[in-house]
Amino acid sequence: MAKIRLDKFICEALTLTRSESHRVIRGGGVEVDGKMQKDIALKIDSDKSDVRYKGKALTYKSFHYYILNKPAGYITSTEDERDPTIMEILPEKIKKMGLFPVGRLDKDTEGLVLLTDNGALSHYLLSPKHHVSKKYYLESDLELSEKDVEAFFQGVDIGEKSLTLPATLEIFENDPKKAYLTLCEGKFHQVKRMLCAVSKNVLYLERVAFATLTLPEDLERGEVRELTDTETAELEKLLPVQ
Image (cartoon, rainbow, N blue to C red):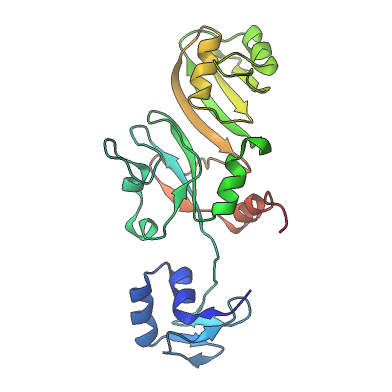
């Protein structure tokens, strides 16, 4: 990787604004390869330089990835004139990072939302030609049946030019009004339209998996956390080698 300015490194490593990184560097406590540095414009190697703040080693991240357990009542967007958006429930520190949601969940749909500043990955995940999987937990107003399982696997008419792509419906044995539905496309209101195509209505919908990610059981509704190194690596593996 090309060399970058020390202030940019500190911005990314500590999640600070540019002016905040300047104060941190000029205030002392930042070391580069064992030497105190107060030059904000110092060019360093982001991969090889040993950068520390108050003795703690820092790592430069080109991109950031966060997972949000979205509650109902919020628009999956960075801004909206009429409705509250998911950005309003994020901690201030994360709001400053310039992240955006990858795809959308309906206002009343809950569950997994990926937030990132990696435009290339977002484009890949949302591209129709890549058939990235999305898994939902749903509750129907009427009991689901094996006939519905077969219909979803064959594809149903939701008013588009062609039938939906094969989808997997897993009905709960102890409650046939509940199921998991896994899709490999993401048309507008698709799950609701698919249920409507088999004469049923969605009463509750939650996304529980997206691409390589699964909604963590310990992530409470409305909470957000950074992806682990393992989660990040698995996600970035999806991108073709440039």
